[in-house]
Image (cartoon, rainbow, N blue to C red; front, side):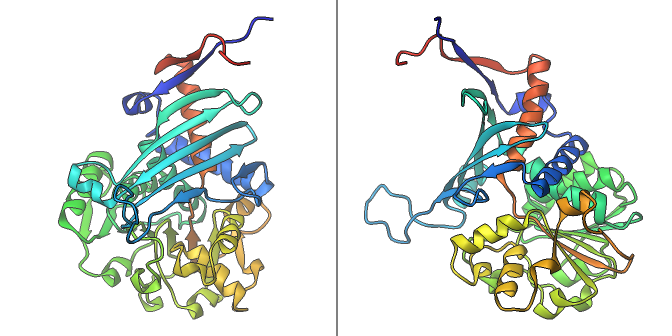
Length: 380
């Protein structure tokens, strides 16, 4: 019997752009379908619980060995495997390297690659540049929240942290809510603010007013939709997280929270506040993997929800998966005054799903380069 050869498709960043990685509406539709699958359970991630975010290498504060990296902000490597069912029906893994010091070398903080594999044979299907893939899917998961939970006539968007994630979030939200005309930006450095404004000016001409906010309060007040995506080290603790006073919040506001943000327990418990997560099983997995209180280590707000369940301050039924809302199991927004906190943890299933969509387009349109793994295996 002849042994089969294996080729895989290599897509560099330019190829990814040609294959539509930056199509924010298509990416949001893809994430909407994915969230429905997560609610149904047709997926697997790492760990025995099938919900692990990934396996992460971190480094000691004072390494014993001279060549070993030293701990620092966002200094880590992470393997993030997943299988996604439904129409995607594929396995894959994002390989994630991150170091804040990259900025001194004119490199992005994170440099990412994505591998897709056949679910049955495990043969590689594609190896692709994943910085844009990750950025756009990270924006699209909050985008599903904006599409389904934001006020229909939302006019003011406030962003905290004008980096890559919020730049793509602005583009995504603008496409989903053409009523948005005012953008408020709270950032730490002028360079990132300027890059964000340049990006928005090119991509989103609907914003007729851009306001640079000196304080978090100024950004939050009057905003219909808010997105928090500040760079926050793992383990920094709540004292390092942006704190939002309930008095600042406009009735009906939607908070999209892929980054750190903190609120009082009383506000989270309030009848005026609806608590939504991308996948509660992810936060339960984090609660298993990290010591209580998990929110001190994992800065995503859903981890605070888990700590509050642990403390008897919330019931699990107080927290709603967006997928369950999309599948019609629970209601979404229930009034124009309801304030919604939407926690976004980020999961490799998202990269696999959007990667598969981009891969399929690239194959159909002859984008990328075929790489030969073998004509026949040397060992069989």
